[in-house]
Image (cartoon, rainbow, N blue to C red; front, side):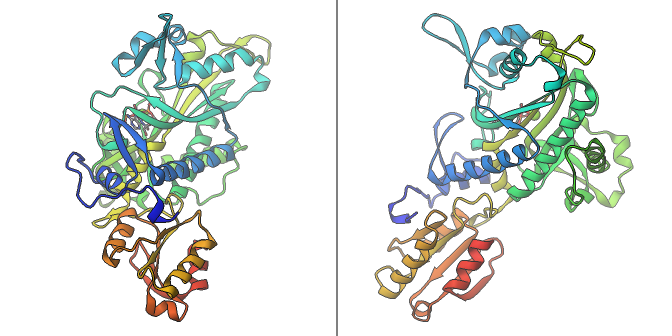
Length: 438
Ligand code: ATP
Ligand code: MG
């Protein structure tokens, strides 16, 4: 994309209404604009980031055998009356009436819809397990929308739903999802620690929230410092083998990590003092086993191995895709701006033409840009170099390819790595190889 023709409205001033750094940077870097309280328009660069995250989530869901569907954002109230949640859900649910006075709602989550659809089709235990997911907008009328997209009212979520014939199968599905999530976060370039979360009336240990550690997080967290460097994915896991899944899960669970609500003083004492960490975290995902809660209340059964009807066991698996955009920035920025992890960045590199109008510079930049116009942002504006550098740092491109008249004459450019500030003097080809292979 050519910067001179693109819609990337950056701001020099710090927006006064934004309380946390990610919100300020998202506004300043031109990623989003608020259109109503807790509701945002995603601008071109912001949308690229959102899509990059969603695509990684999708690939890692598919890799463990989950299948993508797309449910409507609008749901019928009748379904929620069947499960008994329509009244229980409270004022966070946006309730709507159509012209015939029929009660509808904007989906805050989709257990009812998916249970109904799947329940109508499944006949036998032989068709299980199934994991279905979607990446779709949700609406929750949060009492206090804040921190930009981190606590919005309309937000983008990956929500997945597992159906198994028995508890053992549901446990395997749960562990598979945990694995998929850790792979997802690794590819996103952030560390999200799985922490034991509240299971409510269901009980057991099958609820985990994944938290990105950041001082602005809304949750207090306690965890074993060994988790700061642990490679959860060091051992290969065959997702079709229960023993592999169990080993993986036990390894992750053997380190203490819990949010405030589930903090256990006794277990905490068994963590060596020098490894005890207390801090704050941002919940970016939540996995949750809830057994037959919905299949029972909505009267869904399949024929079990002996022919008798069985209520399938379920779990819900959510990732806050739009919240992740803010959370990644909270975890990865400096005073100058965003530092995008490579796989998330809207552009791999910005090409900074320091002397627009100079034939050598222009020719070299155009040639570079033509190599990957969909992955490069070409700053072809005739602004001062200082302003260009500031915008490049603010927008957080992983690489800056700096083209000035002196180097250009010799076919050389300067390459800057945003995350480390390292600079390299390279030929055009060397720079291209480094940037495009990263
Ligand atoms: P929270 O405790 O932050 O309100 P939740 O527990 O209600 O979240 P879940 O129902 O577990 O949320 O939803 C799955 C994921 O969706 C969360 O882990 C979070 O990343 C994201 N999410 C939930 N509410 C919002 C929101 N208002 N804005 C943006 N993302 C959200
Ligand atoms: Mg949650």
